[in-house]
Image 1 (tube, rainbow, N blue to C red):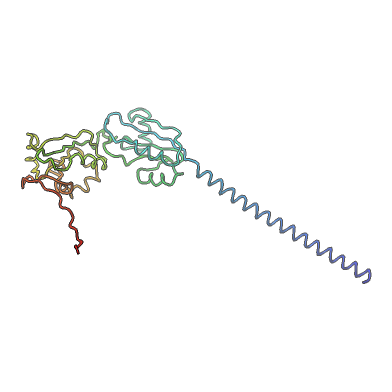
Image 2: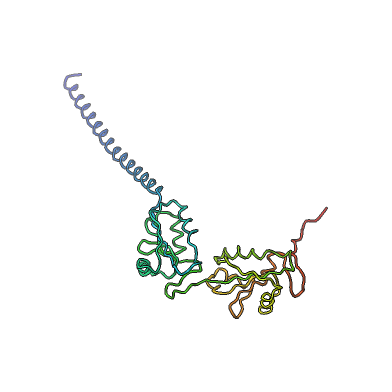
Length: 283
C-alpha cells in the first residue's frame, strides 16, 4: 500500500471515529434527559405519596345552643372524624347566641344548632369527602353540618324540635312478657332521646285510662307523644308497626307480636311466639 492510500485510510478512520463519538455523545445526552425525566417523575410521585400520607389538618368549631339541655350529641360524629387520618389543630365550642356565633350563623346560613363547622384540608381524606357530601354542605372551603339529629334548635324561631315523651305500658300479670325496656335501645338507634321514659302498669288507674283512651289490645307497648315527626326514619316505618292517633300520639300495636311473648287483652291470655316449623323429615 502506498503512502497516498495509507493517508486516505487514516482520514476515513478519523471521520468514522468522529461520527461514532458524536453518536455516542448524542446517545448520552438523550439518555441523560430521559433519566432526568424519569427521576423527576418518580420524585414528584414520591412527594405526592408522602404528602397524601400526611394527616389532613382540620379545625373544628361546635356551634352550641345553650337553651337545649337534651339537644343532639355531636360527640360520636366528632370521634368518627378523629379516627380518620387527620390532625385537629384546634377544637372549640362557640355559643350560638354569642357575637361570634351570630356571625357564623349569618356567614354560613345555618338553620339548626348544635352543628359543626370544619375548616382546613377538608378535601384531603377520601372517606371524609364522602361524609361531607352526605351530611352537609361545603361553602367557601368550609364544611357545615346540616343533617343535625333531633332534638335541635331551629335558629329562625328558637324553637326546640324533636322533644318527645316516651310512655312504656307494662302488664304486671305477665311475668313472661318481653322486656318493654328493649324499646329504649331500639328508639335510640333512630336518634330519639329516651333518657327518662315513664313506666306505667296497665293495672294502675293511669294505665287503664291509656288502654281505654287508645283502645290498646296488646301489652307491653309504648306510646310516643311530642315532636315525633322530627324523626323521619322512624315515622317512615311506623305505619307497619303501629298507628298515629288524631292527637298525634304514636301507639305501638302490630309490632308487639314481633317482640316476643305478649298479653292479648281481648282474648285475656298470654301469647307466646310460634317457633318456625322444622321442614326436615325424620327417616
